[in-house]
Amino acid sequence: MDLISIIVPVYNVQEYLCACVDSICSQTYRELEIILIDDGSTDSSGRICDRYARHDNRIRVIHQEHEGPSGARNAGLQTANGEYISFIDSDDMVSCNFIKRLYSIMKKRRAQISVCAYEKSETGEWSPINRGEDYCISSEKMLREWHGKRKRLETVVWNKLYHKSIFGSGAEQIYFPEGVIHEDTYVSHLWVKKADTVAITNDILYMYRVRGGSITKSRITKQNARQDIDAQLARLSFFRQEGLLRSQCRLLPGLALHALAYKVKGNL
Image 1: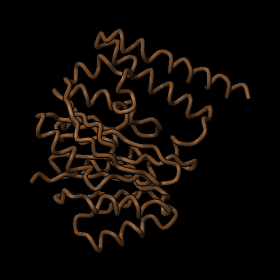
Image 2: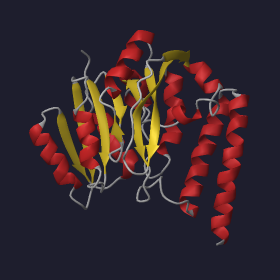
Image 3: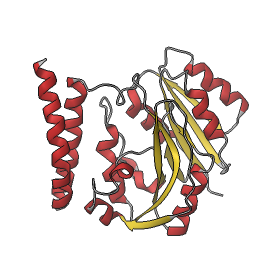
Image 4: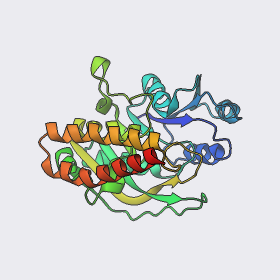
């Protein structure tokens, strides 16, 4: 069995961390390396990470100064040993079959990225659904149809499994940009371009927790509206360079809304 690294950035999530890590440790796919990056937490999150590491030898903990989710994920990427890599946010949860299912369809479809559906929850209550359906598309097709019918699935990085080759190596390695929010928006399309094939299942295997205290799940401010605009402009530039006119056009309405939000916030 291939070793799979799961990277979890952790910052002041003591209320949710145990549920997240328990769901990871309960995976039916057992050949895991679980990397918990304590990103300078000021609550008990770091101690919780250490406690889990003492009881499960698959868990490694990295304690670092606060660098934000990008810096934490990059630290995980730099130390990961797995042939495959998955990112899970520390306030979210996954089905016990999350890794096994994504690994299975990736192997079946000879893909370099696999994707599952997810459910949003404000309470932490959710119901994984195994539909047993999967299909694959070329990375070129996924990019041509970006922000279309698969908009919910494509742009985030936490509902996926990646082969390590997707991230590149040496000077060509594609890391998350640090010091920004909406970091997924900068890299998700770049990683898809590095793949030949993407495998997709409609199984709901990931629970995305909606909470007010997180960076990107909180209310819109002028600063995060500006950063979202910058991220979308970077993606728009990529689609322009690739000659993907329809993908550019599908991005423009959302970009206009964020620009409006930024203007409104600036006038308050």
